[in-house]
Structures are given as structure tokens and as C-alpha cells.
Image 1 (cartoon, helix red, strand yellow):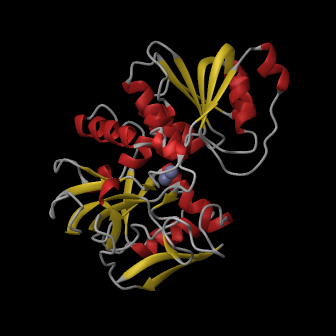
Image 2 (cartoon, rainbow, N blue to C red):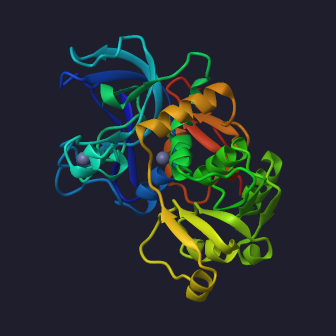
Length: 349
Ligand SMILES: [Zn+2]
Ligand SMILES: [Zn+2]
């Protein structure tokens, strides 16, 4: 079997691997239908390691590099341990979050803040291959009617749902800074929940065009952010100037939700924050409830398609997409499928 494995920065290989086996009694083996590629994968490949353990094994999973990438997985259970509670044949999407269930955060139900959190595809082998082992508790059933490539969007949409947890967007003007995969998902969920309008803020003209095509009311370059102020701003870029741009895009008394994360410290315009009495909150990943809401939203068609054009690719193409800094595919969502035809594409620039 072939698997796309992260060995080090700039070093992602198509390796021959053995099929995973059941180990603990609640393990399941999933035959992969599709696995989405995420900015996190590109970040690990180009600038990492960020989350992938290299020197010592992850305390929860025992894995360290090389690790098979891929955490936006949909597939079918083909084997299950005696205590899995998931029937063989069930179509599932696993949350990539592996939590300990014992720490204070887990006991409080905040699994995305687990103190020893692990992630399938980063700190355990993921779905950029034919078969992946996960815990049964990670798995949510997925209706048969959803196309595999669309079902692979459940995880990024769960990130969007979690980012908006506790936020009522109805009737609001909402700006989204960074119109990549996560930003597009958030804008989509925001519109499905009755926001007045969405404004996209992104330096890339193709991302801005995609936003307009999908129903954003306006698309601005970052230095135009002040020109249309929103009561809620989502910072989904993680760029060095992302939070500063988000603050400038917020009207006085407004709120900023930060979900983008790329580097370390970022500058912020302090007077804008203080004089505007702005509120900043942060969100990361998702929880099981967000995954459930994401499955339901995609299954019902209330979100999932507004801003996404999906390209289904094979492993070799996935590898070059993850590594190649120049091919941005114009903001398309790239999804690996073991059944994709090999693709040969001309460079676009
Ligand atoms: Zn992701
Ligand atoms: Zn925990």
C-alpha cells in the first residue's frame, strides 16, 4: 500500500506501508473514500514541524515521524474491535481529535483543549492512504447520499461551526479575514445562519473573486479593511498582519474571533482595540457536537457548497500540491481519493 508520509520539512514521500491492524478493543479500520488536504498539511510540509512529533513519541498515541498525513477523512469501517460499538460497513467520518478523557479539560467536555491532545494525521497515522486506524469514539456516521469529496468537508466545516459556537450571527454584517479553506467554510456557515452579509478580506485576487462568486457582498484587499466595518470579524488567515487587519475591520464595540494560526507573535494596533472596546476570542479545532452539526448541515444542504470548488486527486498530485509553494490551485479545495484517476496537470503560472 502507498501512503503519503511526512518525514521532515520539505520531505513528504510516497512510502510503501503495511495495512494498519486493530490494536485496542475500541479500534476500527476505515477504508478511505476521500481525505481532504488542509492548510495545516501544507504548513507542516513547508514550515513544520508544528504539531508532528519528531524526537519523542506522542504521549497519547506513541507515534512520531514519519507519519501519514490526512485528517479530513471519510470512509467505511471494514474491521472493528470487540468494544468498538460501530458496525462493520458503517460509513463514517472520524474527528481527527484524539483525546485522553481523563484530564480536567476532557472531564469538562472541552476535548479540543485536552492537555495531551493528539490528532489523526499529525500525531497518529492519517488518511492519505487506503486504510486508516482510528478509535471508534472518533467516528460519526455519514449519510450515504453525500458524495465522498463533499463528505471530506465535514471536518473543516466542524472547525467553522466550533469557531461560531455561542455567536449569534443573524442580521449581522460579518467580515472574514483570509478566504482560504477555513475562511470559506466559516463564511458559508455564517450565511446559512442568517447573517445579513459577508465581506471577504484577502490579498489574493482569485480568492476575492471566489468569494464574490459564492455570494459575498464585497471582497476587499487587506489595506481596504477599514472601509467597511463589521460587527463581527473572523480572523482565519493566521498571517502576521491578519489580526491587525481584523481589528481595523471591526466597528466599535465589535468582536473578533481568531481561528487562524501560522506563526508566533503578531502586532496589533492597540488604540483600535482599546478605543473601540473590541472583544477578541479564540477558537481552535472542534468538538464532537460541532462534527455532528457539520454532518447535519452538509447532509441538509444548508452549507457545504457556496464557496468550494473541489478537485479530486491521486496521492502523487496530493504530494506535489502539499509541497509546492507556487501552485495554490486558485483556492480550490483539494481532496485525495484512492480511486482518483492519476492526474497530469500543466503548471498554472
Ligand atoms: Zn484541517
Ligand atoms: Zn484530556
